[in-house]
Image (cartoon, rainbow, N blue to C red; front, side, top):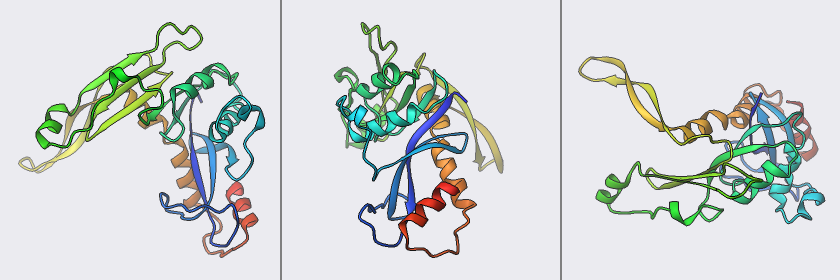
Length: 244
């Protein structure tokens, strides 16, 4: 399909190995981290972080992380993909490179850390007073890069939720509010009713397009064949991860 996502997956490992990393943000625990390209719940391609990053891309002044991602993007069979990434990978510089230099014209989108190409005109100050938070929540600012013919349509947006959240996208064609509905229990009626709410279309695209990596990881854990196998050999951990 056209939609894909890139994120890390964790290979749990209980033994000792020099490339084993401390992992506190995933349920699997300590082990090996892998950058993965996934779509529709399938892991399509991967690059182990303990491997040396591709020299071709590091010589072009890319970080080892972005060099591995570019290697994954080049394995896509066609062109004009839309790829979601989290804030570890996203930056305005990399959004241009993925679109222009990857050879696949990959349009990327995702949450971005402030300072990674977010223009000053859309930055929002983090507030602490409750009355200021209530007044500011829902504030939206957006900017579009103009004058760069090689990279048209780079959109930056900031939305104030409980704190400022920043997005970058080269896959965005508009910035609008989408009307959604969800079921909420109505106390007086004694049943669930459909309640409308609004969500920014950039966030909606990210929520629906970013779950491929997590879905692939969850499916692997649900159907893993090594549930009762206790192994302390690092090559077995990697082999079974690839097999599954």
